[in-house]
Image (cartoon, rainbow, N blue to C red; front, side, top):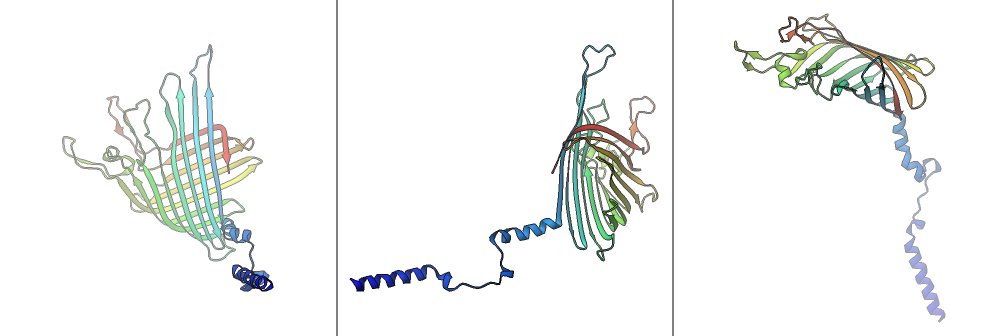
Length: 334
């Protein structure tokens, strides 16, 4: 019996030794090199989060006017502007990479007429910069931007003939240059002597008419098209942009963005202007008011109108384009 008990004890001891091999093969790691399970899971991601920053915004501005037995008269109307913006920025030592995208779409419904579009924009910007040392605010930089619209645009009240569409036009800028970025002054300025501007008109009817500066279709004496108009116009020139954002008073922020472009090859000195000025007023965390203006001038964008009353549209020259905005609405940022 004692022999059996001894043999059973030896067998259990042997099995227990094989079941726990790590106890006999334990490797001693210095405390300075040890990571807890939690630390090992988060160290890499936390490090990346330090380099990346992000901001997301969703909002809607509403305007409504209603009349009931109003002796002065008036039409009931409601307007809504839906917008969103996204920022993803990377900064590490001497390198900076900034990305932003914005979407806007506005509608107006008025008693007695169909719904009309009031705003429409798709915009994306990306810039990459590298500086020589950490004390400098100047970066060697490359910049890409693109913008177009979602839906058809019309010269109301005509709703049968679109004057613009998605990717008609679409604009892109791609270039290299130098950028000054001062986070203390909230100022960014960029100059590029080498920038390619591409204008896309992917609707063939608009391209045949030579809209937005593309080469129009060639026709015979009877007006029949013998060669379709071009869908892309490419320019090579100099681009200057600036951006200034500042809290001028408590809960009141100024946002000023300016873009100037001139083509080397065609009428150098004629400057395309894109200037946005907005004042954002914060009521509370979720309610904001906005007053803004948007000015554009593009020498290639010609306007058409009936100048002699014969019912036919004649092409006139370029004009200053102006949009003014005033709205109060809800916004969610995270």
